[in-house]
Length: 441
Image 1 (cartoon, helix red, strand yellow):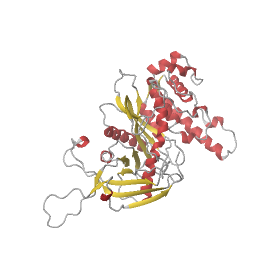
Image 2: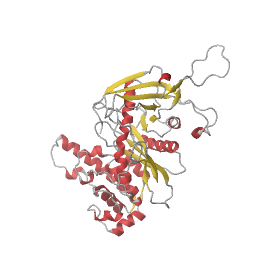
Image 3: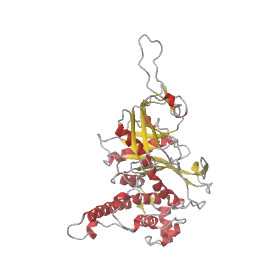
Image 4: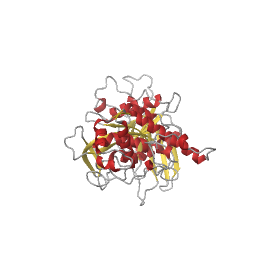
């Protein structure tokens, strides 16, 4: 176990700048490992070595017994199985330890990415709680529904040419859960932990939370209205919104209008002049043009999630964003990408910050792949998630380190089919390439 302090290994005398950075990173890494060890309440030594073995194993782990031959695991088969069967992890304490670590920021504010990715379990018909998970197959617009366990990931994004993300929370979705309500509860708990850890204080910029398509991004701001968060998510090109109702004229009879003119994303004739436009040059896709229309809202009805809403339905205003690029690889013509943000009255700098933060959300794909595809043994899932928290979630702080626990894994293989899993939603073909200077990672 690495429970040392940098004072035990650092040489005497003044340190060069790179050595100082390495020492700080070692202190941070050692402190987090100590916090993780304190979260292991039963059989802590065995579980801690098991987590180290998972971090240092070469390639996928298809059986727990394979970990007993990893040098970092110094116990036998019996100790390993006893740790898996009887060991416990204090999840609440571990979540607090993650929230207390230094977190990356984009433009001075916290940016969280939320997405659902399945752990496919087609060969486990007796396991409870399985759902049909949407996965992509080969070919355009081909999808396969495979039984599995969907997990909701939340990670903090960073700027620069790095694809590391700080994984902060993972929650399994159950058959009785609705995606929007479960995500709102997960975000509410996480924002509370971040506030308790001092990551967000009164007066700080609101936390920006980005979503891919599939979420009800116009309902989430209403569910999280009492939290310091802004929501941004991708919407379909066939969505329809409404402008604010025009002022009521004198001597007008009847109830006042609640909705103004219609705005259809796929009907350019319904688009007035945008409130803000920006243009950013990219290295591969020409100019990335962004346009925004302020204070639009969906016309809600008493159906689906709003079926049981008492009284009059709310007006949830936001900003519609349209992002286009000149061309794609192979001289293909790209379709515009549409986003909806709960922020209103934004300026040009905020507009660019929103769509650039959305594109950065695809950085979390690597962390999700590490968390759920290696190993394939269900009993190792909690330990694997904790191990990813030690390595993938906060690796930027440990960049100066050159330890064995910072190995780079190869692309994992699916435990069932032997092929690379394509879990989650497919990003647009130019995702992440609209950053100035090209792809961020």
